[in-house]
Length: 432
Image (tube, one colour):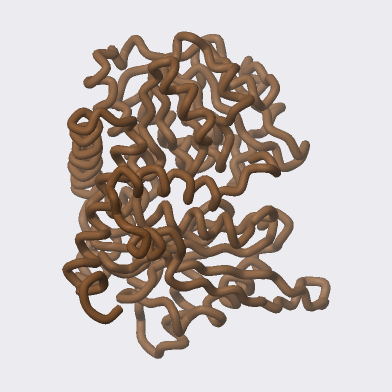
């Protein structure tokens, strides 16, 4: 993301445009434009060398009209309060567009997790919970993994919360390891959810998945399973993936003349999404500049890394062959890129619809935690497919009915549902 791009300003700009179309009124718009609650705190950790280091932590709870706040915890060296605000806002719309009874939240810590030992990461996770435990909970705010965090970290956090409240409380965090309160299918959920929406978009556009080629940015969890799904579920080909190399401190694009093999690449990628370049080259992979993915000769682009990666500059590199963009990341497409898509008739599946599979499966995990009964993977993924398909067609129908861009249609569906919940709870008519 460029230094000039502020993710929260982008989220507000997107919201403002639709709020005017929905004629929400200034008061309601102001309630939804800003988060309801924000937390900023310091977390002291004794490092392995004996020194005490203090980390900056955040949690933002945007809107809980439809249910407990829900959203990941991101460990990133470039984390900011505005980024967390934006992600929490998008989570409100994501839960609403997927029609699950949750609101939007997001958290984070300013840290590069790859620089920490496992013990230091565990201490940092437990410290975050100690700072926030009175303001989270299964009926209040339910965090999950995000960039830089893992199922194991969620297990540590759930354990710390359970210790503090004095009872086993698996439903306070989702994305936990299977066997430790986690759900089967959660690992695949976000990436497969992307593919379920791509499948439905291809039906709408008359595209043949088996003759389609995708280019993907990122090779973390979402990109890994989106690439597997594009090949194994849709029968298509993935030309390339781009990923950040934490050793070189820059990104590279990996391609193969026969299309990439995501299951092979997953054997040579670390937990932070960095592919082992030498092992890839040994298997005849080509390694190019990090921006090469966006110019690939492909029908489908799947940005699945970070915010603002498809912007006013990079969008000009897109191949004329591209018909469909599926936003696997949160906020990867800027308003300027949206205008390019409109002008060039490129169909876009907006982020908070496209990548809603993760929070949907997190909701399933919470339900299973409450029941203390766990579903098999096929049942989880089947329910996920049903939810994602219904969400996609709800937005597509709105887009066709109102003759608006898909992102605007997704906002219309989501905002209307949140406002309806606020009305039903008396927030807009009685005392608030």
